[in-house]
Image (cartoon, rainbow, N blue to C red; front, side):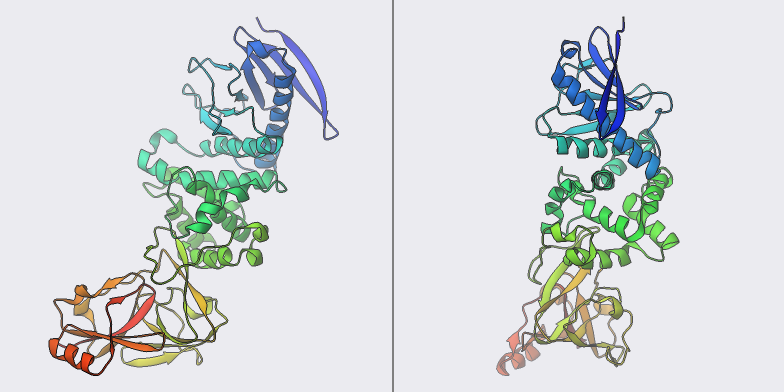
Length: 451
């Protein structure tokens, strides 16, 4: 038999009401859209009532913001049911799973669905602070909204796993949408800022949360509609995930692409205070050297400190001269199909990371590279004469063992030369040139086929 008591509590000068009921195993506290659950032994525990009050208040604030104001879908079945919030480690009994809900001290909370009808519920750790409670509720509630867009049973395990990054990134983003003054999301940023080259789709309990920085970029650059459209597209995307869906939406509706966005995103994270609303609070982005052997993975970006004062032989990202952000560059020269072009005369528009460039810099500085900057080398397709090529990966010179070639590279004021032709190699040594032993990423080189 259920017993019922009505409580009225003033919160933030507004009247807030919740109902208290009990059954043989649990005590329930209910608001308009939610109910908290603890074990019956806590029916008269003022600490549980107080915690439930905070839970329900935070949950209703999240509902108002995320569903009513931002107009995301409301969670499944919430037109006829309330969302259960189990208070962990308080003997709350889940009738569907026939178990008591417990939670490790390592977790603030998580969201899941009842197996019978997919109605979402979540579990909250009772030891969280008031600030943690607010952002945890807004985060977990957004997961229940995400589930309303997704047919979980039609999605393969691989597709589900590859898309967790976007689910967590946007859930962390929503913490800041609901509680913009808490800024707890900033505590998640370090994994990205210390290893920006890593795959967006990594799922390891840390990296996926740090990808809130990309969700922040999307939200501040393009708004929330593209995030809604991405969720709405997932069921019809085949094995494509949110990375590919965002690319499609950017091309279709925003005159952009993931390639263009990643180039811009790199500039944003490299100078966060200039571009992001909260950027002054963000960690510094790790920079890399050409000799750092960390290949850029899917979606990853890198800022490489590879410009020295004077002339440099380097690869550029595949974006265009007008998108290269470096006030230190005086001039860029390219050589292709026997023709020289330079940036001063606006002769270089598009850039290509598989081509090489001569760049004159006024001071030590950096260039940006993304997942989309790929270089390839096919000796058989090289044009007759000299070719100025670029690379975004290490080139070991044994790659040329089956072809007779000559390589030149200029680095830090010195010329380095390599040939697998024995006679030419001896001449190089006699003339006192430095021997080129390896071609580092993000550099360029002259290459000529000898036969």
